[in-house]
Length: 132
Image (cartoon, rainbow, N blue to C red; front, top):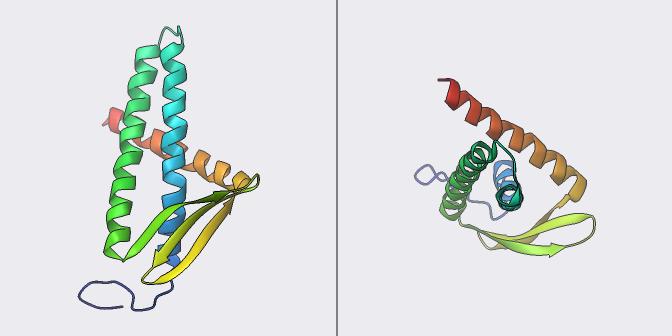
């Protein structure tokens, strides 16, 4: 790693950078899922609809904030990502890391499980902020 920029000199992504690339695949899907949920809530007649909508908005904002920070860090590390092909079983994201081009894939079932874990974390953060 270069001490001044903390960007690895290798063209291939580090384990940490692969995790960031995975997050670049997962976080937009979480936002999409939350936005769909918000649209369904909008059409509902639930008594607590305003609470659910506000909570969903807070969750979307939190995920978008993390996604924005992630994109800035990827740029800093000279990593570019874009949507890759999708199959029935796997989600892909294309990336170029300091000139090294490849794609990262995650099995849909694993992605769904990871999204549930992440969403639980975000919900926990919302409730934690309410209790303080």
